[in-house]
Image 1 (cartoon, one colour):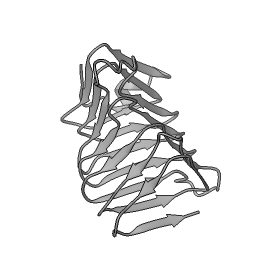
Image 2 (cartoon, helix red, strand yellow):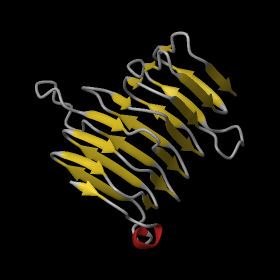
Image 3 (cartoon, one colour):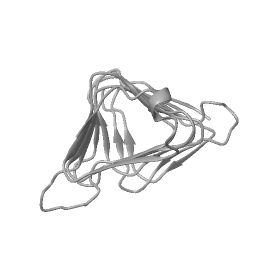
Image 4 (cartoon, one colour):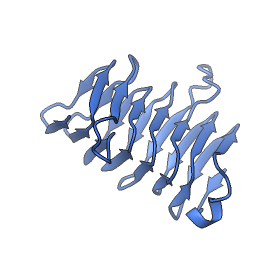
Length: 178
């Protein structure tokens, strides 16, 4: 399934949209904006363009069926892409993890939760879990939510941090603001 160029005006009458596919979901060509969005794919999710929620949460599960036999379920965020939420962001890709192929940004007002392994392969990974700076946005990783930004820059801003998994960055710069 391909999602392309959904404007805030076009999606404004839908409070929370759920996109659920047995196969893969790709956000392609032009950015999309929703009130609130839940993405559930059994195979993979690819974000080639910015995705924004302007009222509620953004949740992406690239391995909704969690089928270990298929070994699918990769969430890929292309270089230069920003995922933005007026509430919180939750990323999940149980089988193959989450890959940022270049510089990427996660911006949320009320928290960013990483449920599975993240690999940043190039550029800066910027995570702002408290974009309104009111001190309530928490950056959270669960036990399997490791972040590997070896050789890359990792920049985290949050009101609070809960690290359940490992965060590794090699010799690159790591900056945290709490």
